[in-house]
Amino acid sequence: MNTKAAQDTRSSGHGAGRLRRIRVVLINTTHPGNIGAAARAMKVMGLSQLHLVNPKVYPHADATARASGADGVLQRAQVHTGLGAALEGCSLVLGTSARLRSLSMPQMDVRKAAEVALGEPGEGDVAVLFGREAYGLTNAEMQTCHHLVHIDTNPEFGSLNLAQAVQVVAYELRMTALARHGAARPPDDWVPVDAGQMERFFEHLERTLLDLEFLNPAQPRRLMMRLRRLFNRARPDQNEINILRGILTAAQRAAGTAPEASDGGDDD
Ligand code: SAH
View 1 (cartoon, helix red, strand yellow):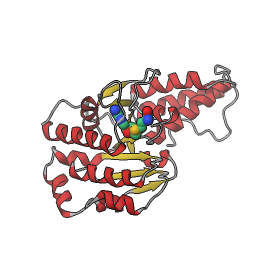
View 2: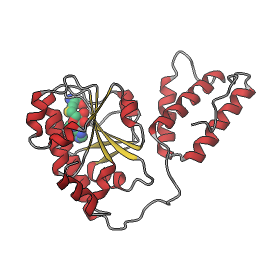
View 3: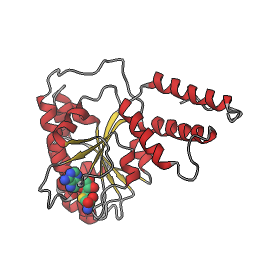
View 4: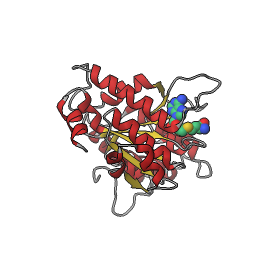
């Protein structure tokens, strides 16, 4: 972080300093210029954590050119081969979408999303996902998200350029960060688990429901999608996840399908 950005995020305590926890995650970006422009959009608003998942071409001169001065954000950008790695250590995942999908996932406008992001308890980071230029986020990626975020637009022409969408989100985050002064927060002892733990819980849940012959092995996905929505809405903390994993292991034991060295419960 260069000195000016460091001052900006550190000196303002409960204001812009809260922006440090925000990760901008660009998925499978096609045009390197958009990556650079996103870095610039972030830096002007005081965001610093850029994560790139499978960028088509990166690094690239177009990215550096469009960053125009925000090269620090670009140089520190972390490149990942999968979304899971980019979300490690994140307790809240927001997905931006140009389209209002038929799948009724919790969806919010960008101003509300900024409130939720900055009100996130605990020490985990908050990821905001941005999709590909051509077709946005996949359904699987959306299902990793706790909320979908839509920037209100002309209903007949609602798709912003990727970096411009990053700009709008970053601006709303900044305005909210500056406006927040001791607003009501969830209890301090509630610390939701990170995305990786939720994924392992969902895998265990699916395996157990298959063992119990509750899920149709030919078509497990529809029900799992609903269950993901339910548990993502509940935002379990570490204790609650341990209890749920313990219940799953007990159910597997009762069904006689528990693995020898059980991984249920409290090992992660
Ligand atoms: N044609 C794609 C749009 C991709 S635009 C589609 O229909 O899904 C590239 C990315 O910019 C999107 O994946 C999203 O992350 C962001 N974006 C663009 N317009 C947006 C909007 N109105 N609200 C929220 N995000 C938007």
